Image (cartoon, helix red, strand yellow):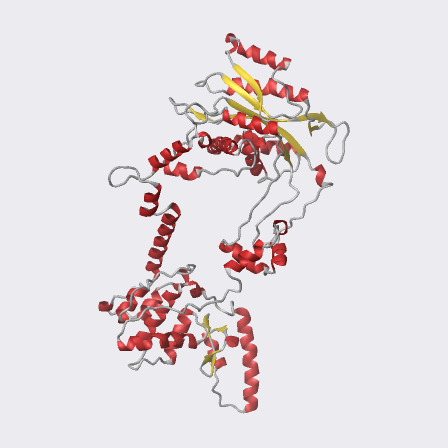
Length: 590
């Protein structure tokens, strides 16, 4: 099946675009010798046949991916074909114009004539010319950047929560706002409610984070901290989001008795920092213990769901007795059993300030820890402490561990509590060690941000580019002790910046001004590298003609896959110099 187009009066007709088979081409012929009545009847038959053919052929309008090709490359190809196919007077025949329209998907032959008319005189006279277009060409934007900024700035922040609300109050179409959002002129921002802090809480947070800094200005390695916490895991979520194909018809209906009564289980976890044996290279993942707070009962009578005597798993209410049992009978024993042999037998358990949590002076707690403190039982030093109040960001479980496990758990379908427990335990077992290492490094960065914020929680989550750092250092682990820049004097920070600056030709370190003037910034360097890659890629797709070999432009264009050269908005042909004749045109196209 090939694409063919009918023409009337020397113009391309958009309404008559259709795909026809070569065997049906005579149906569209305009030369007939029959009588008017027979001709009318044949026209009706031809119309019916054409409609049948069009219904079987798809699409009616072929795609035009060549529009994504940079305009300078398209114009270079058009001028090249015009230069090869015109007569001595610079006139173009109809077949050549049709071939150019089909090659570059121009809707009207006038577009080709206008391009050739613009450069024809300069080409025939042998004078130099450069491929350019008017500054005022292209689509006119209804809203300027300054006007858009001013219109949005006048809208109160509380009325900018959705594009629909912002569009209504700024009197700007929603499609325009979405376009500017995609182009980066607008950005999305989120605001999460954080715990309200009293002055005593702020001081406790500041003292806690400052105590983590060693004498050398770095945070301690946190190797002997064990964070414990609890979290609810649900059998299913109230809202789910999926990505479907256009032709997929999937039944996404879900139901339950009440959204507030979805089955759930509370899990308690004890986590330490992963570490590696410096002698043998053995890795310990730091996962000490995961415990579901459930109780088991047996069905008293048979029902449609289960026979009598079946064991039923039910969530357990958490109180001080249940928490004391878990901490003393499970967590402490798990630390003694799983703690690495090459590490000192010392652990400090950190818990939050929830009501069921026990005090460090609890009798049962002192009995268990004193038992393991005896040399005959290992000589362990296990202590219990509270984290600052209203500070979930200072506990590794609340910070990221539970959230990451929940993301893994929600990738599975669970129907009851037993399946939920199995899935959560599998997520705990398969949790990557590399991710745990990054979480503990993020905790040190949060310590630094808390000190910078004066103990408050008004800060942005820090990012140090851990993946990039690991790649740049050939897969090495992130240092265990990150620097505390919040407590470093300004002179020391400036000294470190000068030590990291590139050296000058005389051997010294370049200042900030010299480094900024002599070498591009990080953003400029990345942009320059991307531009160079784009230029190299487009040069491979552009026209490269060797005149002495006699390669024709038409045959060369047929070998180029113009459909795969789109998607770039930046022109790659330098228009700073003049183009000399056909050879210069070939260089510009290349």
